[in-house]
Amino acid sequence: MIHPSYVDLMKVVNKGVEEGEEPVISSRYSVVMATAKRARQIIAGDEPMVKVKDKQKPLSIAVEEMNQDTLRILTDEEKDKLENADVAEEVESTEEN
Image (cartoon, rainbow, N blue to C red; front, side, top):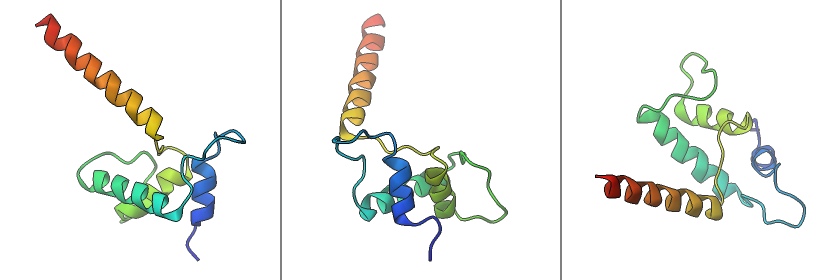
């Protein structure tokens, strides 16, 4: 059995969701996609957010980050807010120049 399990990871990610709200993730596929994306970021040179054991693989690091709640999956609403904020910052900086 893989530790932590998909169910455990889903509980960690969804722990801040109040009853009646839609969970951040609701499938194992979402866990796989999020950890794979983070593993690619680590391979590309991003610093791990957890203590890394000797010769630990990027995917294992990403799973550990998610399990320790240092890796956060954004909801669609949060992504939209970030994108809108980034666009607003770009507009402000171009207007200043």
